[in-house]
Figure 1: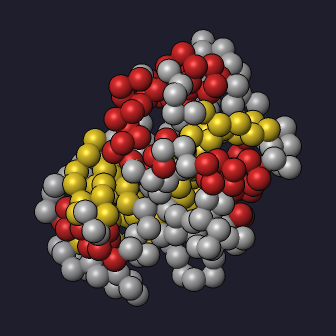
Figure 2 (figure 1 turned 90 degrees about the vertical axis):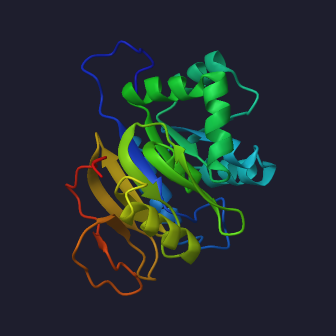
Length: 261
């Protein structure tokens, strides 16, 4: 279990468990198969039901259905609570200090990050992560921890946005599940507008410890995976991946994230 003392020494590892899409907040998109990812997340912190997990749903404006889904998913296997959008930095710090894992839901990443910056929640989360809190989440909650982000939708278009910078490089959720997002991400990496990074399909999670990929977890039998995407003069043949001008390869444990362009 994590200590609530911010002066704990030596410094714990910074851990991120990034889920490309699906899970308990999207019961029609792979549930209950995706539950295996959430079970593996809990196992990182210790035996259930002693694990303390908290939900942040700010990217979806604290959508009540998602908050309810969170409590229903974890009430029998963990101690579960959530942080409302009205929380200030002091309230957030107290909330985070009592957790082993924080799970950030999907939605509008830019609005969530703006709110965190305005209220100082980004600093509180970063401090907690460096004290041993496991950062996790899906979609917006998977990518917000990285340096470079490409945010938006196919309908509204995509734009570059700075992330929290706890992890180097860029990240893309729903990679082969949302073709316009994949095409835009690939283009921005290829043209050097976006740092190289990782791309995660729905039903797949990447566990990262101190900037190094520890494991890639798969929940579904649909061929979903996670990839390393960066500009290159060679091509790697991967079914379903149009990577002309890119080097796109399955992400492997041991890879160290980088921000080199």
